[in-house]
Length: 375
Image 1 (cartoon, rainbow, N blue to C red):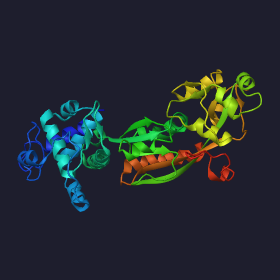
Image 2 (image 1 turned 45 degrees about the vertical axis):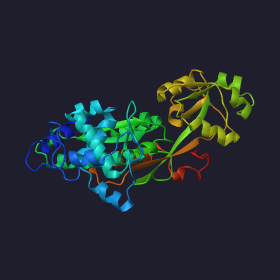
Image 3 (image 1 turned 90 degrees about the vertical axis):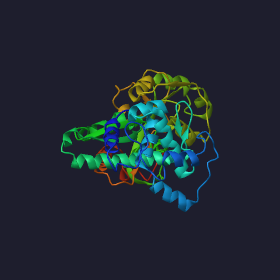
């Protein structure tokens, strides 16, 4: 991912060979003078990065050390995770591999934890994920500040990462965000199942998400958007063959099921709601919303289709399976607790569109047919 390269270059220029540009590495890959993180201090105090025995700091010391982390160390962590390796991150930041390794060693010494798993591709540890989220929050704040004060404002954009479930993305979110895309905001939209999208908030991979979880992620605000209505559907021929007496545990165990991907949990929640059991049917995987709906309409198997998509097929193409009322999936908007005009603009567009695109509480008949992760 390269959307932050312009920001990195501007920051590198500011931290280059200017007098007093300390703390941090210079643009040529050498370290600037920093009493805390100088090469001599780092070499004496930092254990082998592959070791799992970095000493744990007291909570008050850790808090103080995190507040004192030099920005270039956080940006090094962010670049390594986004680029997937130390080599690629060094190229992105235009510094040597030894310089970027030194930054990470200094960061791990400062917080008393390993922050990166040296795997292929590299991955952030639990502490690394917390610091990655901090790095991206700082980057967002810097980009918005630069946008306001830059004389060439038209060339300055703010990058906003959000996570959206596939049905919302292809159904109503893209039209809602069209006006936002005309502003100086670059949208990075990740597609993820609504039952696990909050993981990307916790890890710092995203700034906001549409999720089915009713508990706010720590450090995030939450707004209820409404309910997405789904019908269990199949072709008339499929229904007659596999469900002549209705949907039972026995028939659901045998009837082919269409799944979006292996993270798709919606059909399983529906089955547990009506049978209170788990089933293991044969499955087809079709990883696009339109393709998924078409697969059901072509007789691949049964599946849950958004009510708006169900009504778009010619009459007689699909029939509703038991129960007749739709399954109502509650959706929530969660975002970082961060003062950000750009993120707030995205949130306002999503929330406004949800009021007409989704079923609201006053239309949900006291929660009948709701689906949830615990259903």
